[in-house]
Image 1 (cartoon, helix red, strand yellow):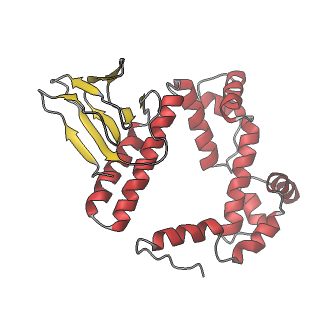
Image 2 (tube, rainbow, N blue to C red):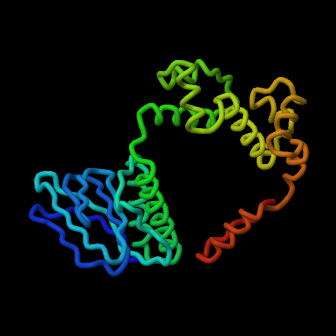
Image 3 (cartoon, rainbow, N blue to C red):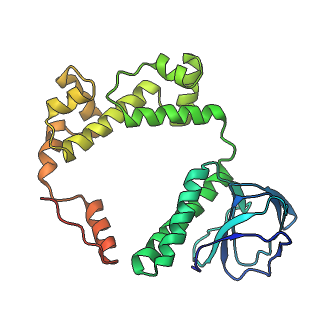
Length: 271
């Protein structure tokens, strides 16, 4: 990959690319303009991003009074990186900006770990663009339902009601439940149970809390009922996972440690 770069296009700027020999990530951070490729045209505004592939020859112009600020880099890959169409609008501008800035700063450090971080940011940016191409234009309601689901995952021990969730999304209970099931494949109540069991697994395997303490923290007043739900969802009794706390690390953790060790980062083993 070439150095990730931000550039504010000059007032008289226009772009007629030669036929590309590699892939090009191209993201609009600010400004207005227009992009063309193979007879397709896209109005440019913040969040519009593209991945071009070898053989493409894009063209672009911009409004000199609202000059484009673009982030991008050239890269090579043996896999299919360019979606069809080549561009989409990334709605999460904050995440887009964080990834772009992190990629830029990490690469310019000039060390192996910085290069690796920049490559990981590139992978995430390409994935965001593919998602924007294939899942465009989520509605305000979809975003609101996503927000409620995120709150459930963040605080599963709270005494949630479906009526409260629906009010948070500005929907009736019936509308909220229909939209929630459409987005997540399960009812809000089942989603909350899964969020509690996921958090319970984390507490049992990482915090040192007992089964009784974990059940109480997540709103269960009946420990046997909690244990039954836990086993239904995980296939194990909570006490089994609690007893497994002493194991040194998971395969995933060991793999991550090996990956980081390649860049001079050593993780202290768990006591």
